Amino acid sequence: MTTVAAFDVDGTLTTRDCVVPFLELLVGRARLAAAVVARPVASTAALVRRDRDRFKAIAVRAAYANRDADSVRALGVSFAERVHAQLLRADTPKRLEWHRQQGHRVVLVSASLGSYLHPLGAMLGVDAVLCTEVVLGEGGRYTGELVGANCRGPEKTRRLSDWLAQMNIENVDLWAYGDSKGDRELLAAAHHSFLVKDSQLSAVPEELS
Image (cartoon, rainbow, N blue to C red; front, side, top):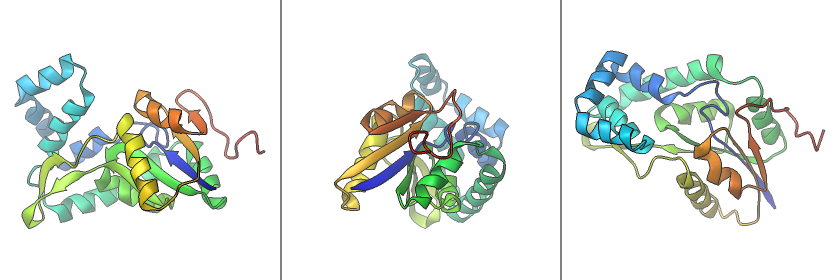
């Protein structure tokens, strides 16, 4: 049996959401807000319907469209370094490290953006990063469109299942960590689930300490 530990990122490993700060880093807060306001019908409809995925797609398009991949990559690494140094929680990264020390497969499964989540995953030493990605078009520039669906809710379990199949991992003991409704399906699929929003997580699971 293979033990796999799947961690959400924003609010689970970090102390705050990371998507908006990174988008603001790309284009600036004022320009990001202006770009969203420039699409009043779509933005208002998304807000009225509480469609977080649609609103996020609008904001990502505004920040990424026609951006050079090399410049975004550099900003992603810089932002990941900031997250690693300043925005990680005190508890959950220790549990992640415990899983690594046990030889478990550790995966980040997050709606955060790949531009900074891949370098952050490398810093944390995880085996895979499953997240929201942006289409890279011809000429090394982003189109601003998302690659598939936003990685939240049922999309998290689908991405994880696909990764397990790609890695030929069939007999799984799944541990999952999350903090919000967007992690509900992932937590429900796990043999060991931890909702960490309002709790302090021990470095070693209490049943094993």
